[in-house]
Image (tube, rainbow, N blue to C red; front, side):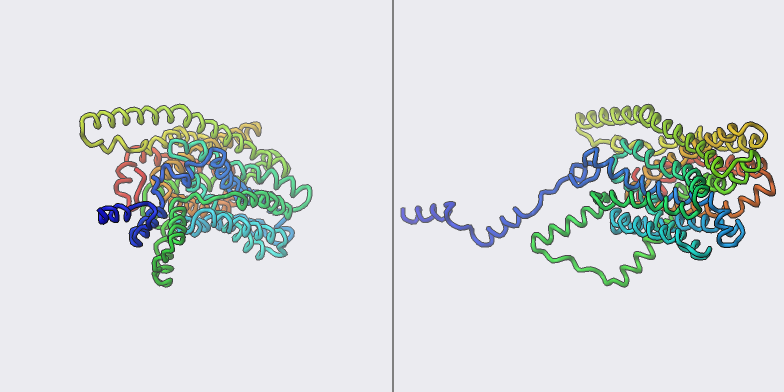
Length: 514
């Protein structure tokens, strides 16, 4: 009886647990409960709508400023030429070199964002961009101006490549279209406002005020970048969480490989990824070519319009800037078309697809068989291309309309042609961006868009260097017609991806979302 009592009392709650059992219980208590990522509060897609909008406005604002800085310089080119005693062609170099900076910056910033996170890239690049813009306003010779504007473009460019990836981090695929459209519209609106602001500031003060205006907007953008911005990239969020959990459990950090091989692998694989995708992946490569040409035409207009409208209609510098509002109006109507497409037909197709998939899933579960893989797939990426079909036809039409009406009719007609160009360009770019991001997702999407950014700004920097000679030699009619003929050839690209896109994705060397 005594032995039975002792055996009972040894398991009472007042007695301590055996040491090994107690340690095991404590380890289990300290071990975090695993939550699926789609339900994780740290997942940016699960943030409040207000917080997601706030984090969407940050890359949009940065993209607005860095593209404004490109075109706001152009009205001051004659005054820069006079100040530094150089030709207008040489004075055009700081404009083109800035765009080259926009081209090469994303080849570094996009892979860095996929390695170290989005937030650190924004918080590093935006203030450095502002410093180089400040320096360009004080430049005392053309060489200094060229160097400072190159680095301003280089450090201002990340929002143009990782902005799309940031928005893909924040918004689910079916909700992504409107935020992405809003973000994409800003780099189109800003260059349209640049010549207007630059024209009147140059007339009222001097060309240096174009740098001060850009600096003012940059300082405004710094506040949200440093106040309340959180990391959005899944990989970095989970890595930091794992590090905190290991530290709280008293576990040592896993051994790191030697720094030398790690850096070598980073430079060889990560930094070269955008260039590799540009030349080996047909989807980002060909769309980059199409979008790059359209951007190059737009930047050619910024350089050539003062010559065209001053000679054809006798416009002043400020009035030439006003003509670019036609581009802004076209972008606005293109934005409305994007919103309608994504809220009406695209949303209806997604709902119909998900309803059919849910019905097939229930049927498979009732019959006790595995759910077929096609009942789990996201909406086809090719649906994003539909808006590019009419735009690919409208693009060359707008260029031919401008070519054969400027100087022959009232000035409003070529401005209307410019509006049609802006509308078509936005829709093509938006279709390309959404298609590429749907194909490659957040994992490789930033590098795919960096490849796009690289090529489009290289061409945008090159075209203006011969734009003045081309428009003087051929005249506005044949110079613009030459661009229109090239646009006709490139217009087949979205149609080809509609037909062969799924097969190209299956053969991709990178993991795609679909």
